[in-house]
Amino acid sequence: THGALSVSARWNRLVPRYICAVAGCQKAATMQFEPLAKLRRLGEPDATDETDNPMSWYCSPGCLRGAWKSHLRGEQRRAYKEAEGRGLLSHLAPKSQKAFEEAREQVRRPSLGAVANPVQRVEVGYLRKYTPAPEDVGFRLEFACRYVWRDPKAAANTDPELGPVLTLDSDPTLPLPPAPPARPMLALPSGESLPDPATTRAKNRGSFRVLTYNILAEIYASTNRHDYCPPWALAWSYRRHNLLREIERYNSDILCLQEVQEDHFQSHLEPALVRLGFTGVYKAKTREAMGRRGKIDGCALFWRSDKFSLRQEHVIEYNAKARESYSDVSNSRAALTRLLKGNVGILVLLDLLDGSGQQVVVGNTHIFWDPEQSEVKLHQADMFLEEVQAFLERVGPATPLVIGGDFNSEPTSQVYELIARGDVMPERLSLLRDPDGILDELHLSHNLDLRSVFGDGNELPTNFTLDYVGTLDYLFYRADGIVPTALLALPMEQELLQIDDCGSLPNTRWSSDHVALMAEFQILTHQ
Image (cartoon, rainbow, N blue to C red):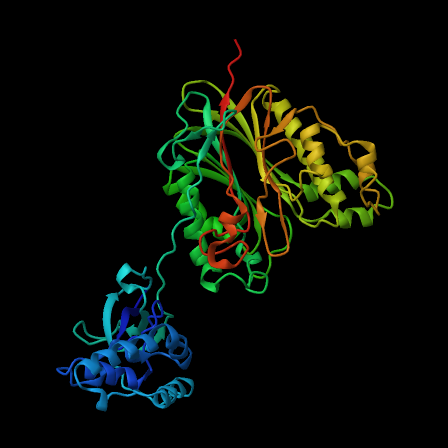
């Protein structure tokens, strides 16, 4: 607050006297099923108030109908037997098939009359922001605020002017779902299980972990596209916390993140990762934002401050590279327009602070997505590899190299072939549709000798949506000078998709439509 005008805020937990009897519902009751209340009264003669039976209260006709088979019939039969033994059958309803059917009809068409269900307000916070506590689970929260005006010209003992109280109620508070299931580290090449990465770190000199993860930007997480995911689990306010606790659990030393929204990098991710001991750089895509400023995604690269220091940084703008390539080419307008997608990449040279005197180059990129424009993907991959080679020439050709990213290309693609093989076979290149002659301008070769940590063209899927399951994300390394010693096991498809029975990502436990890849590397010392 500033000056004489301020805001007074209060958070209340709304605790209704009667709660819906359906397990897990926790909503305030709006109706009572009378036969259940009577059964309780007959079974317990000392109870005089029909509202004593909590199992007779429901929030809606739907919950009442749903509880009929699983609860009501069993309760009636149990009470019937008790009443029979105590000589109360003459007072018990229902005691015949006809009466039983009448009770069933009451469930089908229950009375919708209003019932008295007073709500108790329990104050739980007085700031503008409030994080629900475990005892809030199942209850709605009420936010109440009013303005407070203190006239600067009035006497010191003058009471302030108070505005009307405005309130807003939340939906019932949900319990925090468990974190994504633990993923073991596997030693390479043996495949032996290693201790949980959450409890260990890479400790040998010249060793470190690298993680790559497309975290699904909020601008792409729509309820239309991801209608199988509960809206609260799709909201960035939930996903950012779940993503951070997942990333923290992996205990990586370097993070290559894609689909990082610019405003979220500034307000959420960078501050949170700095608190975890990371320093990072960010590059937004070079296209217009989607709506307000900051509503654009990009790539972020973080490293542990106690393990690395930044020596050099280089950003790659594929739009700029396309303009360079076509500046002197006639009739290139169509090709240039097709290439201007705004994708970017980042390269950094890091010094290890473990006394080894070693350095490592780390790259991070996100290649264009559209499967119908493979020539654009190949152009971006070629430009990226060209920039990597040029960067290595400047910082030291023998410097160890690790690359992470979402390449939006499967292991059978020409993009993967270029990266892992070093070139693309002409007969494979001829299979691509290239209406604007883009491929004619590419080098399509490199001598980086790159290998994929997770396979040689046989990687498991890393992207799971309703209409696509496939491998798009990779960790590559330069075979000369560095070797992977362990990897984070990829979860099996059934482990990911059985959660919530939605059959896709994201869901309540996995907060992106991609899965994270991580490997531990050891820099080789040449004698």
